[in-house]
Image (cartoon, rainbow, N blue to C red; front, top):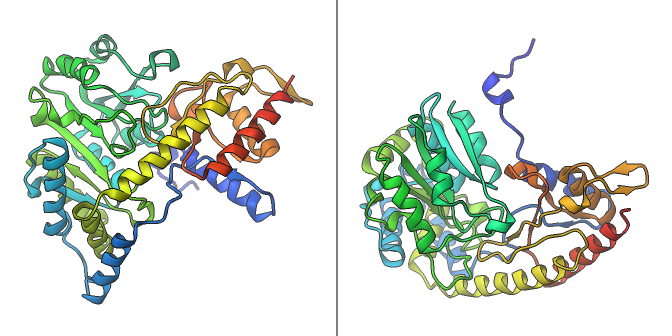
Length: 397
């Protein structure tokens, strides 16, 4: 008898975590694998943030935390949104969760009804479509390829909206492409959405501070749609705090209340100690953020230069995050021995097995014919990884 629910059977396994697991298995077998599959900074959490966590333990912040988060952290987040983004949220409109992933899922589960459509520009992070499916909604993907710098147009957005559209979900800077929408480009999308007052806007801004454009525009900063825009962000990427699991949503009061209600039933509040660390991240010196961003920019330049020389790779110049998303259709149909590279998934597996570099199949991001690299690792490892990939690709015939 099959005891697994259809809800779970219908979900895809996270491709990024699956590839990371495969690379870990090879490393355990003694193979030197360079893992470029996971979007995780290789930096240690800054010292002042770790010290705040140690103080929290000494001060006995070891009990259950309030479901939506400590008020001190929610105030620190509200201050950050006001100071950095010009967004005015009352702390009661902020719900702290176990990572930005839970914050996204909270919002989708509390606002999307069965059959509601959610517009997702693609390429898109692997979990967006699956979260919408979990809510029994209908994902509506809107593709934009490398020639469009992976950004959709207002005309594409308008064409995707129907009477069943409940939400538009946008990530900028983007995972997996690193593309960043300019203020003018966002204004064009907002102008479309202003004419559709029943459509919510969910903005995943987790890569806000890993941004090489010299500025960042939040989707919440446009007056026409501010009252139905939900911001999701967190400390994982900007502060190298992936394992601390602290994210948040800033939302209209009714949605924030609904997220608290849902979270109260299936996880309760996030880690008390991690919350105090996150509070230190938001209220302390931001020099560490700038230093890490500068390192990512240098790595971006290195990877773009090296990847652009690999035969069959078509690359753009990402303006944010720490990913490169090359188009690799020119390699489809090539062979290595009796193996044919028929898909980007075949290429990713070939690179793992023969170059010992872990990447992710672009199909997981709704973009076949692409693969994703994370360059959130050292310059030396990146240079070696690109050299290995170059050698492996040149062996294909």
